[in-house]
Amino acid sequence: MTGAERLQVTDPFLELHTGPGRGYPVFHVVERRQWVTVEMRRTDWYRVRAEGGQVGWVPRRQLEATLTESGAGKTFRDVLVDDYLRRRVEFGGAWGRFKAEPMLKLWTQFRMADTVGAELSVGQVQGVFSGTDFWAVSLTSEPWSDRRLSPFFSVGLGQFRNIPNTSLVDAAPTNAKLAHATVGLRWYLGERFVARIDGSLTTAFVADNRSIEYRSFTAGLAFFF
Image (cartoon, helix red, strand yellow):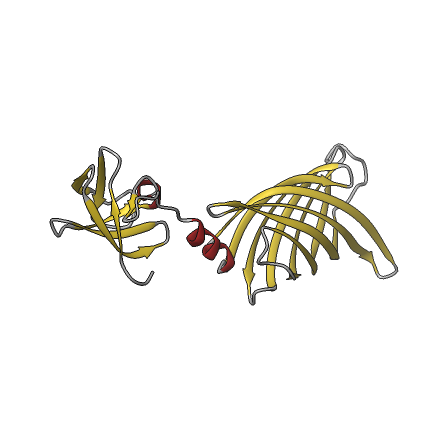
């Protein structure tokens, strides 16, 4: 954060922490109608200087209740949008269906450029007669990544393992390589959260001359930074 901005406290008090986090103790309280000067930012925490010279850290949530020198309420909308545009790493989880059976999927994505990312996903499908684990590494394209509602596309390779229930006779586990193509949609919710839905076509190569195709759909929530 560049420059300095003066803000007036409107809550009964503003607590100054010794560091940028809830784990740091409060060492000073700025009372209502007093002013603080914002000096720098670290994630969702801001270092401020009180009129008496005390310097401490305040979470953004508390500063949203202050007033600017013009008398307007302080807003952090531009800061939040900038965080979204500069996002680099995303962690998420989703629930859905894999060939009509319940599936849980976790993923992490690293943005290599504004519109291109690499993603690692792992999943588990629990069917009536068998359970399936899989993982995949994918290349993701998000042409309109600067929009709040942003479609994306990905292709990837991975490994597929199907384990039949022990109650089945003469059933053996199946290991196979897989390839997938995915189309999805991201929706920026605010703060550091993104909702995501996607549909995939997965091909499992179970033998040299035999493959099986599966369709899946998931919806979930991700956290980025």
